[in-house]
Image (cartoon, rainbow, N blue to C red; front, top):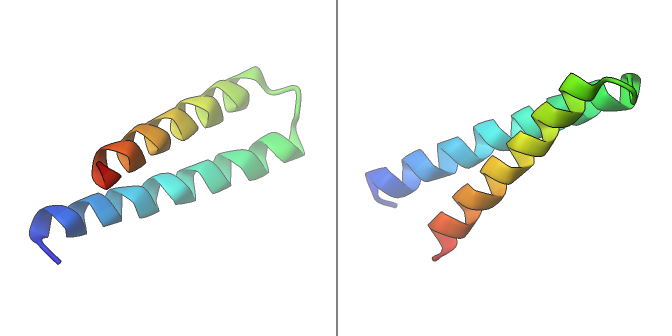
Length: 55
């Protein structure tokens, strides 16, 4: 695995953990607009990263 692939894999893992944490937070407080916005952005970022790394 190249250095850039390792970096991309690490970024994916970080974003996956962020999405998971934010989703749990949102489940605990479903009316929290800030958490909803944050998880939406994190999902968007993860989707974009996955699209870029899978070509």
